[in-house]
Length: 74
Image (cartoon, rainbow, N blue to C red; front, top):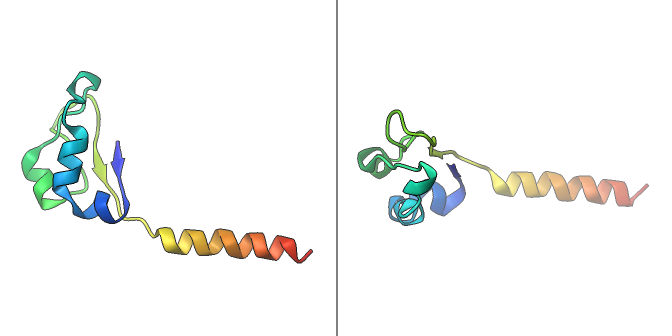
């Protein structure tokens, strides 16, 4: 499981709320890691790895739009 973007990267409360109740799927959050925003916030040895990753969505959108506009000129 991966948390990205503004809320996913910067809100331990939201990450914890999303993971709450997913234990039956093997999701086990490490509270201390989640609070400090470490790259891996799942418990050591858990069945599911939960990560926090930086993304640059704006640049990806700009590249996609630029590509589409370039194709439209052909």
